[in-house]
Image (cartoon, rainbow, N blue to C red):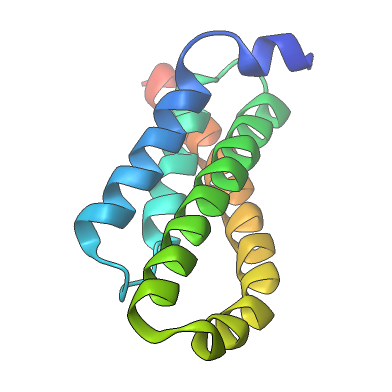
Length: 121
């Protein structure tokens, strides 16, 4: 597994774009966890040569996408509610980003195995 193989192509930017667009379409009130999981699965299917490559692509797309979605969310909350609510949200943001990254990696591994199962049949 090389970093160049993970970042080569348009898979990771496509994953980030999927996460951000589904976050914007679904609204700021809903969780982006299912979207990150399914995006991780897509990354595992696209980057199918190794399990770690699919996991790393899912992790990278989940990290970048969740950070962008969090920045958008914090900006919207600051405009809507002010600084006191933003301070409350910032406390739980780090935990949620870490959770999103883990879910993206799990989705990448599952996507790799889905591809291998489809390829065998």
